[in-house]
Image 1 (cartoon, rainbow, N blue to C red):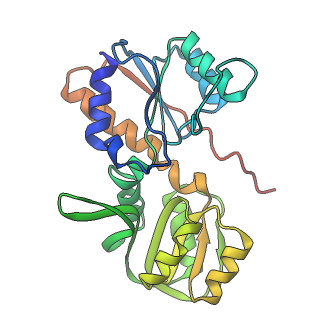
Image 2 (tube, one colour):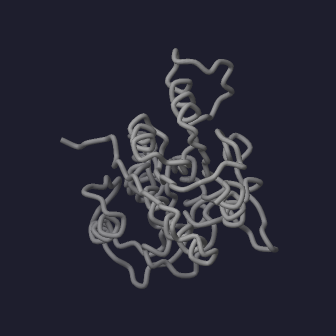
Amino acid sequence: MRLKKILEWLEELSPVTYAEEWDNVGLLVGDDEQEIKRIVIALDASDSVIKQAVELQADLVLTHHPMIFKPVKQINNHSMIGRRILALASNRIAYYAMHTNFDIKGGMAELAAEKLELTETVPLDVTTVIDGQPEGIGRTGLLKAAVEVRLLAEKVKEQFDLKNVTAYGDITKKVRKVAVCPGSGKSEIENALKQKADILITGDIGHHEGIDAVDMGLVIMDATHYGLEHIFIEFMAGYLREKLKEAGEEQLQITCLDTGSPVTIL
């Protein structure tokens, strides 16, 4: 199957036009006329992921986080990004990233809210309007019943397959209105407060953001950046497998590479 067709499916799910201005999504390396026989899906195009993609003789690497954020003036072996681009290009592996476009339209926010069984959900941070409905980053919604933070933490760990989370605030406090923002959510604290959420579940929270949020009445649960976003991998694998089945192209292979969080709590 030509890459062009696969890109149509990805665009159908999460058009690149919905990405934030600062973001860099879409086909970042490759030829859309290329034949694709194996796809590798990961959260990041790390050295390990690219090495495994080469070993697997993959034709396409699909990730959530873009490997290329800033303009690249030189592509050579003297920089980490240059080496990665060379490895992809020399092995004829195309590379596609779907980041904030997937966060806003496509799956990340809805999937996270579904895992927490939130109802009456609304966007946490409205960034655009789609078909007359506000859309954006994250979700705010209600749990079926109020629960203590420590019990909600167990649910988060179970649903997102995590060993640990970090809580800022009283873990015996009962919460019901939940804001969830997979990825880095310190910039969403203000929106969570505006929506009168009891707790914000996100990642990349620093000490000062955490204690300040608590003083403003908001409990914070840091499930790490990786912890809430690795759900992208299996979700996209399922989406593409369904599309391939409909197209009668089930022989095309999809490999999920969840290399895990690079952070280890010792």
